[in-house]
Image 1: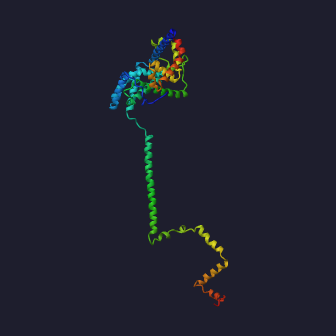
Image 2: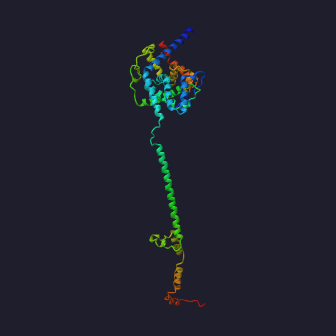
Image 3: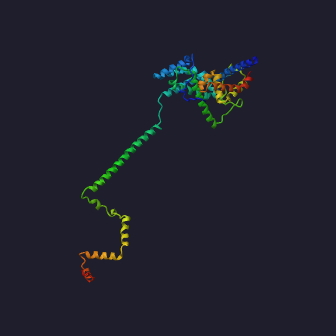
Length: 216
Length: 164
């Protein structure tokens, strides 16, 4: 991943005029930063719980679709929030907190992906014959109303095709389609140039053209 | 052109459907209870991170031990050097003090000076280079020069003497 920064410490997301610094997450992050700077860590942790609640679901969606594993997604999101709090003093209030957090989340997911790759070299996962996904990845809940928009078989096929994308293309596709990030925000979050982001997104959509066309 | 727009719109619809399905799939794995549990775990980890962790005596203590060892080693080296210096000075003083004979007397048989090989060889070379007659005459002269040897007087009288 280009421009990767493990701790997310010196990430400099592109400044965006307007509402990025006045978003609820950015305001909360600025408040937590002030509390930490003034030594009120207990109060800062309490406020940080609100920030976690605000971003948690979105972070889990991105991490889950990038990692394709709920346990790994859970760990990656936890690690990302821990890093955010430990490095909150390095957050620049004048920049978008969402992009800063997304970059830390992407790095945490990448760390988890590497750890899983090392683990998979030693352990052969048990797979479900039906869709070749790991058994523990199969959804346990009842299909939601949104999920019924795509037939079960068709959804499994699209999901497999997305999972088969190269890492960068899958990352860009996930941030673009699941998290609805613009190429500029994806570039700031991943360290790629906006042009590179567009190229990866174009290639991902071209590879998915077959299954997406069938879906119609 | 119309068909192109239609295909673009249809692809957007498909992507929107994919987005909704993907989000629903993720949310099916993480319900509200799972989110709350994760939030509590994050806060618990942060609380633990705030406390000072128990530090194992490695490798920090090892560095301290090494530092202490080097300090004591320096002291031992300094003491050994000082002892050597004191010993040398004492030895020199014993030789300088006048009338001090006990040190030579106590040397014993092992303290006798050993002639160096070069000194032992030198007289032998001189002896072999001299004429055997001269050696004999020198020995006779030495014997005659002694006052205690009177037996050789008669022998001296028998020998030829210069009329000058």
